[in-house]
Image 1 (tube, rainbow, N blue to C red):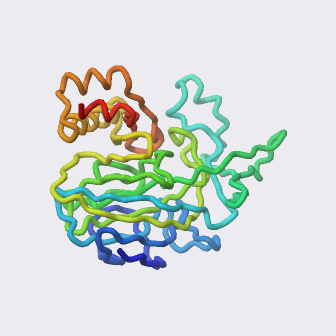
Image 2 (cartoon, rainbow, N blue to C red):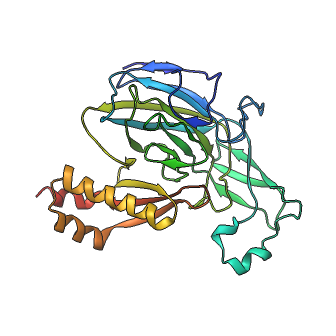
Image 3 (cartoon, helix red, strand yellow):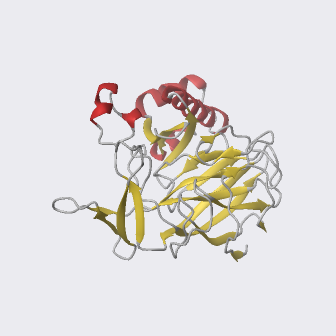
Length: 309
């Protein structure tokens, strides 16, 4: 169980098979950094191409197709004071007749807001544009984009998401969470990036407060555990992610994966699992901006002891 310190020098805008930057073993931890969605590092120097550049990939020994990669996000801290975000609602999140009233500039350029991020105080303060009374929001750092190399030799853009993870932009992917990914290639090839200082549900302006981060994560491998979609676990909930468009298809993937989890691994009869979900399930919107939307299906762990009785 080794703690590796890794400083990236190369970044990827796709999640696919690429030369590993570091080989690690199950139980190992990695302390590393990410750049922001435009490729700017802790010093505000652009070191990578725009478009959610990823740190990695990390090769995990023993991970093979059909296994599950376990990723524990142990620490995630913004490492500079400047953050940026979108200003305006995305046209697809409002009624069509309201779209003409969105104050998008005539030149079509995407203007951005500037934020002062104070990691010690745990706040982000809007600097530009100034608003009456000011705007200060509490920090809730999260990873917008992370996952494993995709299946069948694909290299999938970091703009979107799928069974491999990717740009899910779910604000629950925060320090303390454990995330499970299906493994499609030897070594899994794990990538991470797109840190947000904070983000509302759905990423409805197309960004969170985008920022570079210091991150520490730990990996493990569950041999022979076959899952179809990303899953995760917190101290209080188990969660499944579905990534697709339209939104109802993303919900279907997430709900199906949760039903499989309860039936296949907790041993609940299908009728019991589905009746339970019908009354106590919860859903969260991860992303409704990107090419694939993300829906999260949640179940409070307080129900789980009942499932094994």
